[in-house]
Image (cartoon, rainbow, N blue to C red; front, top):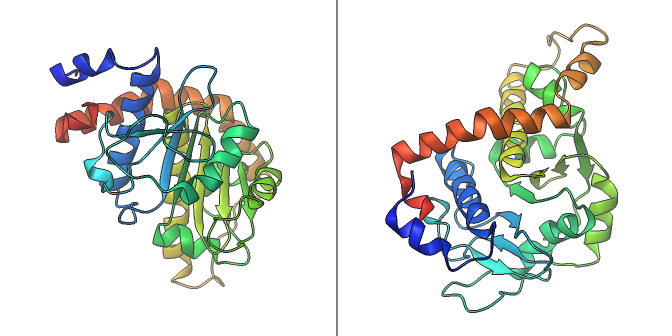
Length: 257
């Protein structure tokens, strides 16, 4: 569903950039829709197609449900705006994102949240438990990074990259959750599974840990094989993401503007 504003806006951007803007704006709207936002804080970012190291990120003065494709701010690897923008950005908030974008060619999108469930699991010594199907889908691809304070220290980028390695999701200890994807679609779906797993774990542990049913031996490895990164990407791009975009179009298609 393309509005007139969308068609007119496309001519102002390099090939592929408008599509990236629409997808990222959709991800911001979906985060708000699912109640994962944290006022104006946290970030979702996407690489702009092309040889320049440019990225898209949220205007720092807008709620996630307000963000549109054209309002996203283009920034460089240090989080500084590229060209003129009507909106401020938070360069310090891009520290985590820039580390992963620059270290991994496959990191076209990086999403980081501070949800209560994600923060709760990030504060649990044992991390994500493999006691639900959703957790088993997410767990084999999850790394951990110890808390070092508010992420304004650029030196932390090196340690973030070392900790995530080749995995596509991360629990930032005492902080929140993070996902990586070669598309906005795959990144969002990974984040969805991780957040749902954290939510289920918090609910599960509220009844006590002593009576949990442990999954049969070997089933975790089976689920890991069934939810490999390539399969996750196809599921996201071909099935889940088009459905999510249709959902947003029914609710409010203005994210495309």
